[in-house]
Length: 418
Image (cartoon, rainbow, N blue to C red; front, side, top):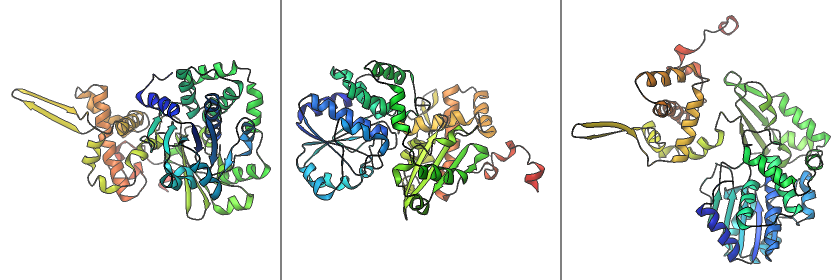
């Protein structure tokens, strides 16, 4: 269990302070979002609180069975106004991006409602609530709620255990994804101890695919593109495909995970254009690539970093010289964006196993006497110069176009040369 934190303590105080709650999750909700809503609603009802759940999107068929324990309402203008007026506090689950709660987002400004956020995604690590419990190390938002319940001494009931198990099972890909750790397995074991039938739950969640959805998956997968020597897969779903098969955005759940089974794939990107001009991007990685965090910390404001040196300084990988009398030392800034530093150094460390150029930069640093962390930061700084140029030019990285990497590329085959 993640140790208690000030954010968790603030969340417990938040729950104790208010009597009437409104819960919501992101548009096109998945098992973690729905399961977390139901589990928290049952926890709050057990405390004597009044709870409503209101989402922008309808509940996917795979999770309708969870609504037996807690009604899940769908946005309507009058209903939303009524629910926001009647609630003192709003808890947003499984997203820390305000825009991801869809049509409910503008109501936050129109109503005097206190907001708390509970999430495990790294994309918006600061949150937008008065209280923000954001733990990227957690496998699922349901896992964070499980820990919060244990801290509060909550006696789990079978309906709470069922909702939390669905949240955990779906966001770990039935315990197959790289975010599945020992804590997730211990949590699952404890939940199963409340009389759950894992085979039944798995069937209820996964036995709802329509023939149209399977055809849609096949159509999109048939046109997948493979880049970067087999390490990146790109999928695209067009508005015409959604319309032809009678599907909506939530019907893509699970699609982005399928190409991860291809040998050698490190990352998958799915571009879903449900409506013309509105594109949802889903990113998945095997664990060797931190797909979301680098993008989240860089954002799209190129003016923040007009030079690559400024980006390196923000990430804490720019060297700092300290001199005093006879003493002279080179170190790295500690005051930096630590999430960005973690993302780029992990990326750099992993890249030396896949890129001969990266391995060369790292090895040269080690030969100069640098220890492993120092050498990784030197490599991270080199990568940031490359990424900065790609970012500013709006071009994808190509090793064959990277001047420093060219000498380390294998010679082209006869077919490539032709």
